[in-house]
Structures are given as structure tokens and as C-alpha cells.
Length: 461
Image 1 (cartoon, rainbow, N blue to C red):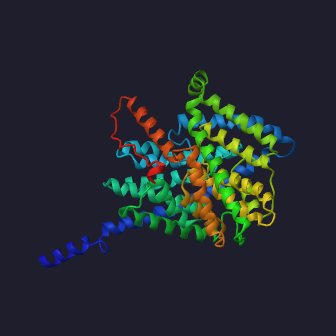
Image 2: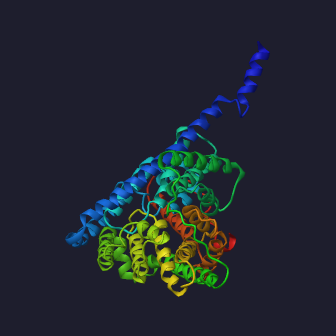
Image 3: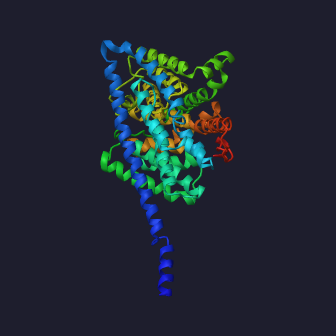
């Protein structure tokens, strides 16, 4: 009997036969599938919110945006500050910041089911108000929040394990939002963690695989921007690689620099007014978005997904004014403080840049140059070149453009660093961390322990 008990204890402690470990594995797998289901539902709801806005401002009712956008922006910021604190911004900086925290109470302020729900609802409100935002960044925070809540429910004690869950949730969110499993893994490595740790790699890969399976089962094997088989032969067309990489990277770097510098470079009186009246400032930004939308005849509202897809498939040709106005609309949408991402708007801005540059290369396929403009600008914005070219390749299922897209991404990254030395998401994460710590210390509750704020800088990557 003693031998039997020892044998039973021995088998129960083995990784492959431990009931406790299998219970955790099953719960973790269920969490990964849940992230995918939420991402799919979020995508459909986002389309519905944008359709609702389009219906409300169609035809002779276009002027209603002058009322809808300011009120929607102001309401979003009010709810963010009073009901859902921690839901502001794109969601990716918040996920990065949470990875630097070691106190569960602080993580709960950033990643919780309440914050995740607020992120979804307020992003939908922004899209229903005409904001130039995307749902992909918020999906990262929502996915990380779901996995963080799962870790708390399982009472996982190790910080490394909890960090792995956050990484896995964010990666699964990207994979499910774009239906790009490989990009989800690369995003977790390059942008969220800046390293690939053996303790968390299995979690990330498993979450992405299970999330991808759920996405395929419910949404099919679709490509985010359709399928294109266009190629770029060697020769004069490769000049477009250089131009799209350099111009797209510089403009993407300018976009990131604006988001980082404007809040700190405003005149003192204006900065004080913005700080004291954030809801009024959000309403002002909404009014600016409305005016830009009226000037562009409504094409700058929303994610920009429809315009980008039409350009990639060769079914549309937008004027250069779309690039300029969409750029400005995305800047004001982010500065307003409403929840919402910049992934999809950045891809649409880059696609329109490539479409404009294509006119200077009449002997090269315009759709190929659209892809180059998309990846060059996107790499310049996020300064994550591997994520940029992997995500564009997976979104279009075009193997012929692998080398041109890869080269454009690296050129865009290098050019972006000339005007913006710090990565956008890393810098926003450090800023968010400091603000969160300052807010915690201003309250009488115990100050949680915070890990060292050391998000990797560009030269270290």
C-alpha cells in the first residue's frame, strides 16, 4: 500500500500526468479560444458601429457629424475617466506597461475584465462617432485582460507565469484580429516583450494556435485585405522600394513624433487648459474630425479598412488628399484621449501613400506599390519592422512580394528613427507607467511595488 501511494504521488507530480497541471492547461486553452471568440465578436460589432455612423450621416444628413462627433468624443473621455479608468489609448502601451509591473493590484488597474469590457464599448462608441481609430490595438489589451483574469482565477503565484499569460493574450488578440497567426507570435516577441523567453514561448505559441483554430472555424480562412498575386520584377520598379521605404518611414516617424511631442510641447496656457478640461478638449478634437470628414466627403471616418482593401485589390484610386486628411484625423483621434488603436488607420494611410507614388511608376503594378507604401509607413509608425512585413504578407497572402516588402520595412524603420528616436508604443508605455505610479501614490492606499521602467529603446533592439 505504501508503494502504491508513493507511485500514485510520483505519477501525480509528472508534468504529463498531473491533474493539477492538466486543469491549468485546459483552463488556459479555453482562455485562448475565448480571446479569439471575443475578437471575432468585437470585429463584427465594430463593423456594425461604423455602419451605424454611416447610416446616421448619409446623404443630406452629413452635417449631423458636427454634432455626433464632438458629443461622442466628449462622452467617451468622460466614461473613460469616471467608469473605465485604464481603458484610454490604443491598448498596446497598456499591455507593455502591465508586463513591467510586479504588483497584482497595479496590473488590475490596467488589465481586468472591467477594463477589457470598457475598451470594447468605448472603441465602439468612438467608431460610432466617426473617429479614425482601429480595433486591433484594443483587442491586444482585451486579450491580455482575459488571460490576466484567468491567471487570477487559477491563483498562479509566479510572476513569470502571469507575464506569460499577458503575452499570450496579447499575441492571440493580434492573431485573431487580423487572422494572422505568425504575426501574433512575432508581435509578442518584437513589440510586447522585446525578447523570446523559453518560459513563455510555449504559452504564446499555444494561445496563438488555439485562437487561430477558433478564428478559422468561425470566420473561415480569409485574408484581412483580400488576396493579391501581384509581383514586383527586378529593375526600375525596385526604385519604388527605396521611395516607399524612405518616404513612408519618414512620414510614419513624423506621426509617432507628433503623438509623443504634442502633449508636451503645447504652450503653457493651452496645455493647462487641456489638462483641466479633458472632456472639452475631446469635444474639440471631435469637431476637428467632423470638419476633416466633411472636407474628405466622409472617407476619413472609421478604420480606413474599406479604402485600404480597395487599394490593395486595385478597385479604387484615392487622391493624395486622403493620405493627408486621414493622417490628421488619426492624430486628432488619438490626442483626444478616446480609446482606439492606430493599426488599421496607419495601414490605410500607408496604402494611400503607395497609391499616390504608383503614378510615378507607370510600368510597375500599382497594387504592388500600394503594399510597399503600406508596409513602409506602418514600419515607420510602430518601428517594428519584422511585425510590419509579416503582418502585411499574411494579410494579403502574397509570397511574390516577400523580399520587396521585407526591404521596404527595414528602410521604413531606419528612416523613422531619423525623426523619432524612441519607439511609439514603448515610449507611451513608459509614460503610462509613470502616470499610473503617480496616481497610485497620490491616494492613501499602499503604494504597490513597480518593476524597473526599462522598455527597450531602438538602439537596443
